[in-house]
Length: 120
Picture (cartoon, rainbow, N blue to C red):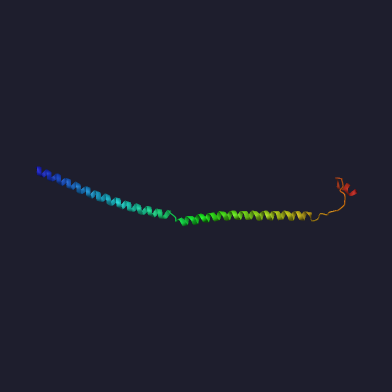
């Protein structure tokens, strides 16, 4: 009986060792498959999200140029607008003074009312 029990114990230990080996192989295979899948997904995500440095610089330069262009256009517009406004004011001033008559060596009247001035 001892022999049989020893044989059974040995057989049991061998089977248990075999199961452990198979379990480790399965675990390693699963781990490798999952890591491979994760690496592929991460690489794909990173490739989708990451831009080249040149693309980033190109985008920033475009934005800066647009900002500078907007500021320059605003300044030019304001300069043109103020020039036109000044010119218009000058033209209005000239138009209002166009019919003025300048009398030389005529004394001013101290009278306030127009009728009284005409009498003098």
